Image (cartoon, rainbow, N blue to C red; front, top):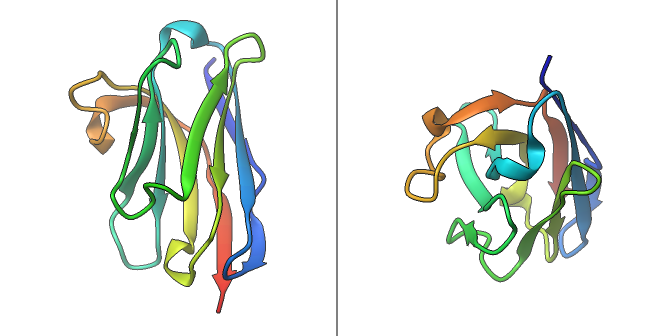
Length: 124
């Protein structure tokens, strides 16, 4: 059974940092691209960042480029999202996902497995 479990969310002030983690089990993690998505109330789930199975390629949404960094540790079956200079508009539930390809990893439908999400709230 595949499980993706996110952690690290919380309530912070604008300008602060948070590091999200996603622990994966039940899948060949080191052979899967991984992504982070987020969903704010009343909005559709949107792409945040993705990383190739080897960690050699990454991609970011324009809204987070230069502030967020995705990384992974294949030995620990984990993927991370370092979020710096947080803004109120970053407030959302953040989801980790497994799957995708290098050509469509910005698409929700490209991913096979999803975590339950972790809430990030940024106050102004």
